[in-house]
Length: 448
Image (cartoon, rainbow, N blue to C red; front, top):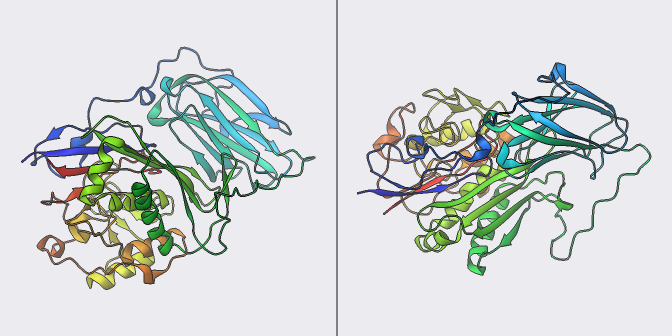
């Protein structure tokens, strides 16, 4: 019997996944053998650029173009991305405020560019990697000193023209107070983790399901993070724009999601977006899969599978036996499975967004953060997943984990080096994460 694949395109991957009909024996439904097609958005394709700009050669940290000491806004236009990266450095003589930033502007369809900010020691402080015509990082909380900017094309994309604007800290100006919280946004709760949702185009019932998914993660994560500011709005602790929109009709691209703003230093995300095709929302709600899909997506926005490498908690990536090596998650895994392993088995099959970004399906089976969901719709959020968030750096409440025990199927009792296989009657997830594994989303496979 054929299966119908519904692709969930991540905002950060910029890669449209296949949404056609494939036979059941094509391998795991979350394998990029299904997803890889000739369809490439223009932003990913490197454009031919004849002439580079006057700041070359500034292709590395050590060769960064020096923009000097800045005390007022500086804009540089007619820059060209015609190589692997453009580096710039600048100095500011005061601490950054919420209104201070670094921004690049460009035409996305001519070449997708991303932006990173580093300190003088070469440590990555912040990153912006959306899919619009601009990228921006904040200078808030940064001390006076020298900072480095890296502009680069996503997957090697070139762009014939972009501008760079730096609004640095001004010594004579007192940093403005954060804008007051509006009446529609509750004041931040001390000592609690909050997920704020902005809705657009969703019914009251659908909004309730999104709120239910967010509330589940708020039970798990209990420690507050430093507030951040997104487009002038104070964020405590994660802001997600959730919307229904027309994408490509029934049975095509189901939705798209991903984080796009990260806190300086810790890289904890503070903003992400989730969009679902209006043509598919009702069917997901009817079959009971919508809640699990949203919970799974929020898990990735929080950092499951997306912050592992940055935290040094992923070993063996790209091999037959990748492992998540966080001490707390490993201890929970060993207790539940009665083993003495050095890490939790991570998915070792599929494309770049499936492998190395989920728990291994052949071992953990129906756990919420494996690459497959099911059988059934009640997918347990286990102590392993909760503990992995603690390993990433969140303060969590282990008692809020769902009941979960070692699966009794023969596949779960095999060696943890075994690979995942298609399971009858289940929903499959695939995340198409870009190289830095910053954002994820998934293919869902439903019986047609």
